[in-house]
Amino acid sequence: MFCMCFFTVGKSPVPFYLFSCLAQFFFSGFNTAIYAIVPDCVEYGEWKAGLRNDGFQYAFISLGNKIGMAIGTSLLAGVLGSFGYVANQQQNPAVLAAIKHSFTTVPGVLWIITAAVLFFYRLNKKAYNKIVQEIQERKESGKNV
Image 1: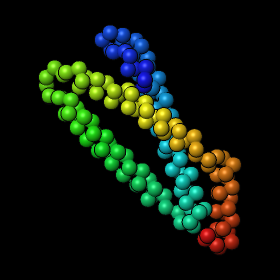
Image 2: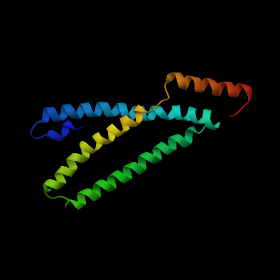
Image 3: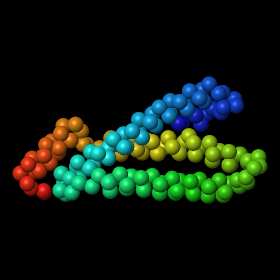
Image 4: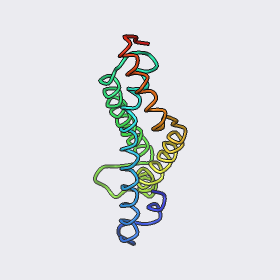
């Protein structure tokens, strides 16, 4: 994402599209990782609280996405407006820079923050299997928590 900041489609299309493809490739990994964590959280929640709430967690992820998109779009519109964006007109350099950063630098920084958060995610395969086993043992013994 950061590298795309230095290239434009008009002046250097090959590097721009190359870095764009690489960024989307890695974005798909982050996106998959986030949704792959939800089932782990369902199991962890049942293990910790004795309550299985799959539907709530998936609905909450969907709600979070919608709120995030609404806030992000509103912030971008506000930033563009403050820099003098005018629809259907040639944009000034500040607006063009804001547009460029909204597709390169800002997502890149957010991905780094996401990677840092995921680094501290400690529910690995061994811990997950232990949690699932304990849940199963509780169900067999008739205990909830």
